[in-house]
Image (cartoon, rainbow, N blue to C red; front, side, top):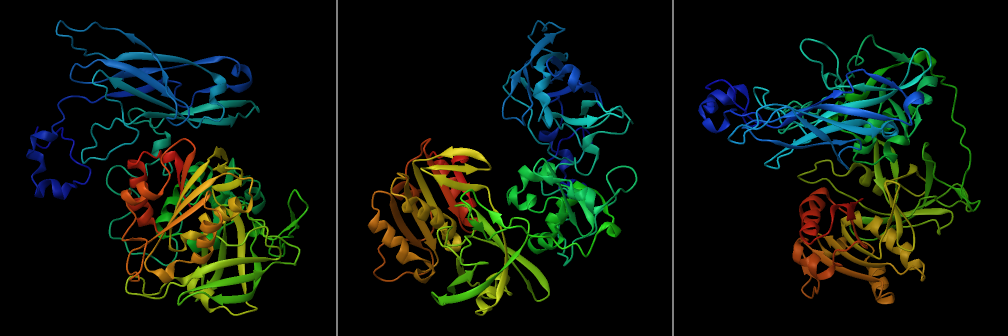
Length: 579
């Protein structure tokens, strides 16, 4: 088996395999097939009429096998991305040998309602063997390309035929032999990672100042779209955006976007170049290339067509200052220094009668041109819709230092602005929205809690403080909160006097505990160091179906210090939310 039939670890390159003599390590020999399955029905590009079959059923069918004489114990189908699995019927063509060994494939089938294909993006298939080994969800790259056995996925498209008939069309990942086609052969279909780094990223690459040009359209000739055509794709179920005169269909990426759905849909059907360049890296630009569908017809743009901004009105008839699709300039009317590097900015809205229009728990974008570069950042104000005619922010200025020689671009810009200067703002955006009485939404899903654990690091205090303020403002809201506020030193504890006042005034509803990592006064009575499991166990509410954990702070704090410790204490991941 030397130089043949080996499944090497994903980080082993051709050069490393020779240098490290990996070809002579017997533990990587591929002697026995691993478990695998495939869908044969529906076939690639098979279509079924929606009108004629919507009330009927469809037979999904295929085969599965494994090695070592093991028995296939079950095959399952999912039509919702692995959230639920349905058990298939299995037909065995063989009997086991006298030693109880199975050497042949099995056939499986499952009848499902055709209506289940409505809203279904993919059909997933996976098999299990008698060792209770299932197929993994994702592929793992190896030097010889052998043994990959991730779940088999068939994409489901809703198409319209030339005769006008609406059909479901099914697309397999690849075609057998030398045939072309299949979703996995396209740029958009390739996995983001396969066990060792990003597939679309070159290791050691130097960051470029401008996004790279998009590649040619996915298939066939390059398509050109008019601005009017792009503008039609402007809602959550159908999102196109323009970046640097290239058109992208981001619909399938919405649920994967780390910034939430709103951050993309606010630019749906519009030119998002300025916003995209302001907040995304070259890595994000490469990811965007997977969704490229064509170029913009520049001649179709009407430069004289300035948007007419209608007044935003809420259900109570109040004028809303924010517009989710357009930037609004707000003028600074006062600035209060809070510490050596933090300050309170108070901006006036369009009129003294306007309210901001920001739901509790959501945030907004602030943008500015800094040194010739468009910069945009998310901020959560400390004011609310109860503060008429104004919006207020507590900002910490991040000065240049050894790690970040330029410091924080936007925070230093906000530190430098003067009374009368304006800052462009837009929103609301965000996945979390608190309504009342412990009820809230996460990605549009209704949730309820009687207790909130809140963990904030530095300026991450603003979103959790906004929610706490809304709860404490209403005596009839019984929701309880326990807050841990982590900072480097005592002067970094923004709005501490307000938090202490809340804890004293509402002892049954609000508790706060502080922890400092770098320096603390001699008489410091709170915790020292970094957030940890023991701290959470002592000061936070215990896990339960009615307890949710809300976090905001530096990524390393949330990923390393918060989430793992909360999970180890028994908190479910679906009850841990990071702003």
